[in-house]
Image (cartoon, rainbow, N blue to C red; front, side, top):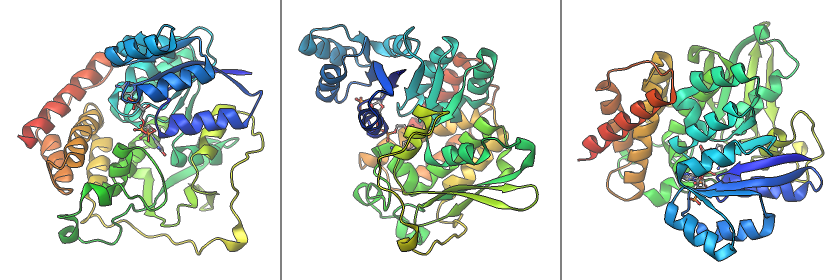
Length: 380
Ligand SMILES: NC(=O)c1ccc[n+]([C@@H]2O[C@H](COP(=O)([O-])OP(=O)(O)OC[C@H]3O[C@@H](n4cnc5c(N)ncnc54)[C@H](OP(=O)(O)O)[C@@H]3O)[C@@H](O)[C@H]2O)c1
């Protein structure tokens, strides 16, 4: 039995991870659950159902109320999350927290020698080299959960990285594929939240609509696999059945194909290196739609270019980009700015930033704070 801590248990990935655990009896024991605190009733119900030995909620008031409701200890604050991430009983930590808040528990888990299944891409964007160097130093495994990096990881298992020519990440194109910049000026949060193929949390859904999510995945894959961003290509694939491809040195292309269902990559990360049968609906190849691939339109989706620029420059720029994006997406969802103000704000924040190296958590925190402050200045 693998003993599991799930950070972000109340979110889209966290809930699907618990479905995976439920569907594979005898595989896992849930020893820790942690979340932010916005959904404290759901969290309290999870504590009653799974009875983990450690529980944490970042919002102190929510932690207090959940503790009272369930009659057990719920650790408060970011430190509580770090304690859960480094819990001695755990074999594997699934990090499904959204945003920069996922970085410090990731580093805490690694420092405690835990393998980490990473859904939280913002930590890898903000401080990828720090995270991968820490993991290497501790000899722990980082397993991607995000479907595209998971696909690349699975395609490269048993293969030498010297055989890799380049990575091709596929993008659904989001709800606004084919729209012109003029069309995009007036789109609403409701439209942005209506993703054609994936059901996800609100932040990543808006990031998918701007293609920022794909830009983050370019940086995430570059950091995880130590491949320069120039060797990572993005193609729009509307059917979301090819989750990514690798082009080998002899020109052969390998594709990872499956239904657009996050429970597959979650199950792979949680059961790795085993591959037990998955109970999720399978892809019927004979009735699958025609598969298409196309280049993204850089004019309508400038966030992708910004991510390549930040990923190429490295240092503090990706962390600043990610922090500013969190602030601008929240402002867009709150109706305070238009859709195209997200890339406009990001462009302004990046061009005004004086980059520095990120060698410790404190550097990442400083970059995050500067990115947020610059984005707020743009909003003001
Ligand atoms: N959803 C997907 O299909 C998908 C696919 C690939 C990658 N990802 C990545 O996985 C991560 C999670 O995405 P999601 O879609 O599951 O997001 P989500 O549905 O919004 O859930 C986010 C989770 O993070 C928790 N959280 C938020 N702020 C926190 C904080 N300060 N401290 C501790 N926990 C906090 C939330 O807790 P409360 O709400 O209880 O406060 C919730 O459990 C993101 O990095 C995303 O990019 C998601």
